[in-house]
Image (cartoon, rainbow, N blue to C red):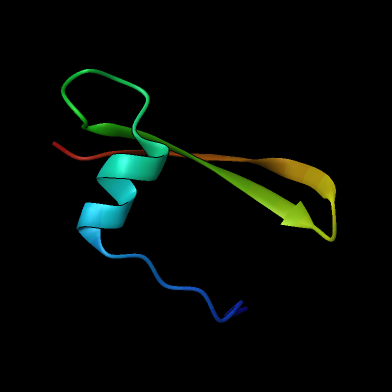
Length: 44
């Protein structure tokens, strides 16, 4: 489903990067305030 949010690459680098090289990102999936899970993205 489209949740109505979009991120630019620049936004992703600042907000979601979890490594020094800024190639791995962690995005938290929530419903209301409850965490449903996490999505990890790695750009190679």
